[in-house]
Image (cartoon, rainbow over all chains, first blue to last red):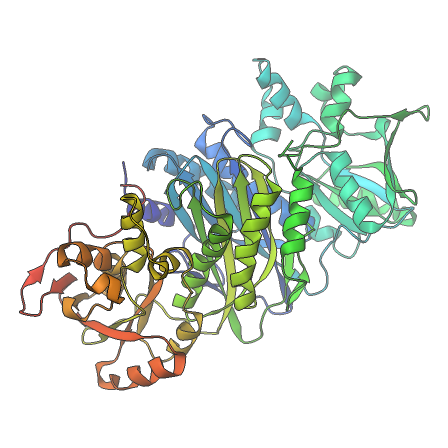
Length: 316
Length: 316
């Protein structure tokens, strides 16, 4: 059993050395950070709880990685560049080995994007992690959910359904292919893509609650609706071969993809390919915004498909 | 049982209307906030867990208030002015009434200091609250722990031991006087005092883990030690009359006071009275910084008193 002060020291030691723009990092009552001239601050905060968002016996490094990833994904969806994070970890016991493993995963992703860990908390309690991610976006240039227009194309990055399929297999004690496991445990936030969408995409969100729910947020915030072309949903080969009845719910209504869903002017459809090439991220046009509110999923023959539920809601 | 989206809406409705400097508040992937020219950003994050930091049957309004108070106290200790907060609430069930009560307390304190709630999370899990508070301090003007000098006076605001005495009484099913209960449940962060300390105090910390532990942080960060005059410890009359054997540990090593402890040039001792008058906050000189590392508690006759433990450590 390790004391709180020692655990804080452990986290501080594992954190990046004093990063860019950090006047005061871990070790005082609060962090002091230098703003980026001409930019606005972007702040996201997400919690992951044992037994709800992850299995209690999770590899701590995977949890450390993911707790930051879900927050950087939110920053990416705003078109912003992450710079700092605050981290609060609650643990039943002060387990230094566990925390060291956690920090290894956290730091791997933090280093990838140059994110400095500047503060937070460690305390006793049921296993739970909360991260606040802070970043910058050029003043007035953030991506919103509320600015899509009827007629815009709907585009998603990467593939859909792999993380949910990994969970589905796990729940049935099936072997989980590595690429599905990576999608679940090590999603790479689409930070570079998000930055390139600024000034180009008309609206953007990250897909954490499932495509139908998250595109639904864009649609309702923008005062319109959307149609999804089921034949266009991108999937890894392992998901693509699944029976439709299993595959479509995984792709449409399960959460945890952490891809970006954005809208794009139809007149500039050709630019999407260039954007994909420039960022190295697969991009798929999966539908369009329409006047009529609501999200409709359309089969290739024009019929409407009704997914069983409309997204991952933690309180249902 | 209420859905997550409805709970987020409830929090958003209860939050301040779009506050100063808020370009994008609750309702998108992240908040977008305008920096304050000439200032640095100050960020603190604290978690409160049921059964560790509060009783599971706590009045939700008290918890809402305190979850913000402990964070604003950290900002106060840096000399900064709070402006925004992010809030993550985990609850076993989506209980809208409970959350409404929680937000009432949170908002009462947020309104007091003009703090805008700009984002966060609500999810299923054991009852737990994490707040990130964001504020501003004039560039280069923050108060630190590490800048005290041997010879400086040690000053504390308000009184010590009331919150701990309330807890002590509760644990013994005793009636708790209202002023002790307020000290425990509704501590008022010393934001105005903190701001006035900038450019005057040599170092500062908030007393959350007990005076000996927190003054110990100033001392070790500053490379010196401190002596506390036991006769000078400020207490409410209800605490002052307690037997010394009970009173001193409550004042020295119990947490939850959320007063400021700061160091002050001895040559300017007279200014402390003016500062107290200007801020309306009682200020007591309780000791002095010394060369020799460590914290010594001295009786009026010069003898050394050894408190039983050196502060509230969540992992012991």
